[in-house]
Image (cartoon, rainbow, N blue to C red; front, top):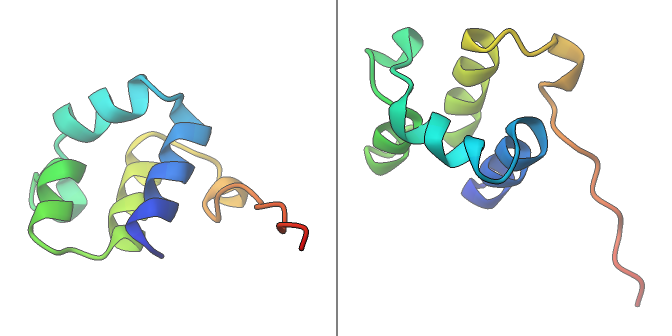
Length: 74
C-alpha cells in the first residue's frame, strides 16, 4: 500500500476532515502507542498502520481493503 492509498482509504472511511484528526490524535496500541502520523513519519508501512486503525476503530474486516478505484479511460 502506498501512502496515497492510505490517505484515500482514510478519507473514504472516516471523512476528509476527521481522517486527519484521527491520524494525528489516536494512539495505536498495535504500533507502540504511536499515532498514524507519527508511524508514517517513522517509516512504518502504511498497510500496517491502516490495519491498526481499522482494528482500533472497529471497521468491519470486509472494508479493510479500502475503496475500489475506477480505472482511467485512455
